[in-house]
Amino acid sequence: PPGLSDNLEELQLNYNNIKTLQNTSLLRYSSLNTLSLACNTLEKLESTVFQESKLVESLNLANNDLNVGYQETSLALRSLPGLRTL
Image (spheres, helix red, strand yellow):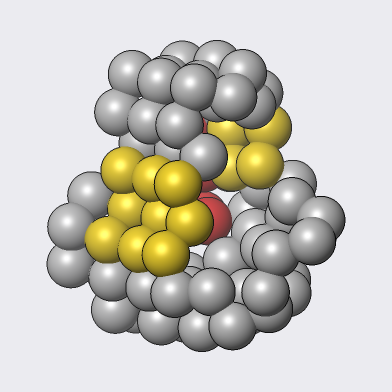
């Protein structure tokens, strides 16, 4: 989202009707460690969406439709070495 600080550590994007998290969506937020995308219409996470988000430890994807784009989403999740909570 525009207007947010680049050094955010937590981002809550619940209930926003987000369908796809694009590769460029999180580039600005390299300090991000907690991301919540619960209760959207999320179908997929593009494969390199977390390329600059290596610090993410907690990711909430509850109540979405990720079964649609599960293969690309799987690739995206593999790029999170510090993920502790999903």
